Image (cartoon, rainbow, N blue to C red; front, side):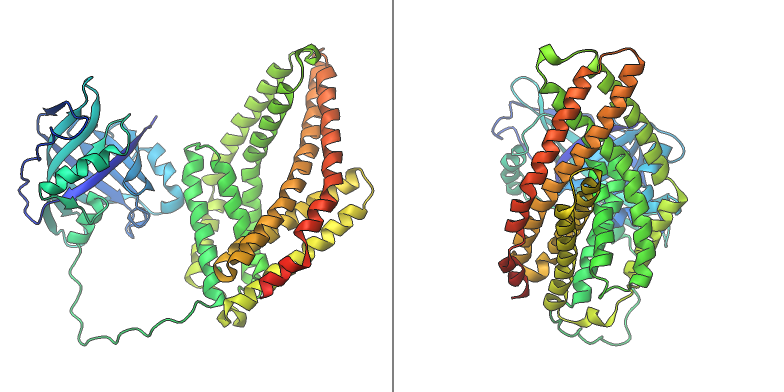
Length: 514
């Protein structure tokens, strides 16, 4: 299986010469006890991408490299400027399935084919501390890049890299940089070898017959532009979240699910801007996807809550193998949920949804209100959602305690989430009033969320008690936990009127209109 390495580095250049000058002397850098020169190496890498360079557009590189100490397939994913996660797989003739699967939300049905070949003659110096530990690796590369398609052009340049050791503080890069600058090196304009290779081997553009007019100066964004910017950001979050979910990154399922919900909410909230005849079918597919993501997410939330509740029980009241049963329950749900989730992300239905989102953004179904100034249009949309929430809260508070109220409170929770998302989407247009309004709606959503979690916990505890009883185990502790969850739910219900009163004050809504 593929291994992952966090790579933190900075790239430098020293002019246009293809002949690399020697690495500067870094023995005087604070903290460096020894500089150890390594044997020069020749690295031969072929970079793969789709014909329309979907990976490169996302800052992702996929290569097959021979030579050096880490020959194999490398998938590099951007984390932050100068920081990437490198996922490695053994050498093989074709792109490893594990790596191809990780970028499927980008490539979908497009083939990964060779794009550029980059050969580097590398000189390496290890910067060692007094204990022989590697602080960083400084290298100089003589680079030759050949475009494998589109005319087969070639480029040459010299590049320097400073890559941190595994346990080195990132501040060490700042310590070394003045020494590199003093030697005539400057930070590279290109974030990666591939990006520079693509730029320098690009086919020359055809000469223009006449000079084009300078584009007209843009005015303030319209409501349509504002909404589309938000939709585009959430669609990108879904695609990025796919990769994190496949890697089993902590909280990735939740983050991807939130992005799907924000998208669906935006389509409904801004129905005066984007035609719902077009967006409603997409929203239905997003609802399906959120439900599939929820299988794993709900398991995570429930497992954490039940573990916390068990930890609160005094040892004298902890009867039977409660912890062991809870672990088995959580593990079984996790294995099943994850296997199902990956099959969903590989499904034709999901890939078609991603294609549909791309098509929507390429040709958005804008309505006449999209041309309006955003402030009034966006504020009206947020307040429409608020009025819907108000009706649901009033209905829930008027409903008799019991399953009916539980359902009503859950519906109010979903409405509160929609208002919060709407207010957060409105922040670029409405500023601080929208930010404050979103925060107040979040307080309502959080309380209602705690109540719903208690409802779900009681259902899980009842199921666990049935299993324990069938196995001849004591169900005392599970019943105790069930009772405590009932008491918590009652407390949340008593708290709701005050939280709602504070969040729904008229002055907060007036600020949105101002």
